[in-house]
Image (cartoon, helix red, strand yellow):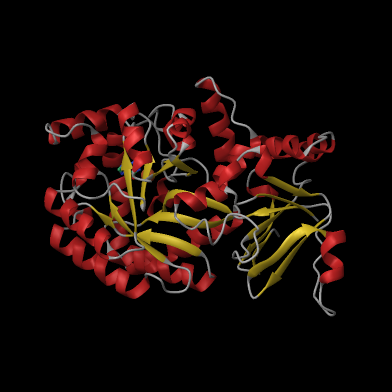
Length: 426
Ligand code: GUN
Ligand code: FE
């Protein structure tokens, strides 16, 4: 079939110059890894006799999508009406998350959640659990069973939240360490220290989070920042001496090149600059930012400052598991900011850019030899309208753009994890 990816070359990241398109391509795999990717005419003669070939002609093969911010326990309250962030958390989110104390509930949701990621072509994700260690434990187990590259953590939240979803600085630290011991580095799994957001974490909890992050070299840090103006005012009240929102995290040692901050809609230039200087990443979550009325993220500005960016669905504030739908909304948000988000950039953000934001760019996100073979087979005739519109596309960038506007879970024909097909459209 046809193959498209954005090559992993820092000199040309996410631009047309990084695009590799093979209208009649071959992706050669061995032991779940990419051995080669290129034109079939070049590669076929080099294959050992007896190599098993799967024909996907008529389809488009791309790297698996990477979701850099999603909440697995918010599955059952996605599309909850009417509120902005802080009221939405109180009214819908915390009561829903309280249910995850029950391991049986957590297990059932984890299975559904990961199958839904696969059905939408998402092969890797950075995932929030609830405050309960049972939630993260269930997710890790389900991800291990599926062979997915997943980074997750139990949420740290020891103040300003209902008791049913509150831990203590001490228990949060202990539970995080227990989960790290059990899951971090097991198979393709990784742990993220996950303070919910500054207003929900005491100084003691934040201090311990910073210590834990410093102690174990390849942990990620995952949190929310500068999403909603009410939230930002609250942080100012809680930390009158901090220079700005980012400074609060920085003071506790949470601003690092392993840190991923969701949203970052209302950052000032100085905050962007310090994000870049410290190698921290932003998860851009357009469906969530529009749904909660949070604001319009300035992608151009983040890029101008040299900050790493990946795409996040932020389900259940986000309204779709589909990274294609997320790119659709991203394009519109950029338009309102006066920029044109081109399809090379947008597919970069949903694949290799996301991988880099999660410090896994050397393992997934594109088809260089040696990378893990997480990839998608896209059905270019998934709906009558998509088929009709794609038939009159004359270039790969036009095809990708139309896919990102009209596509969703219906275009995901197969999802491969480390060379094994883990989902096929019925
Ligand atoms: N800030 C703190 N918690 C949350 C959450 O669950 N979702 C979003 N979108 N923002 C948050
Ligand atoms: Fe979120």
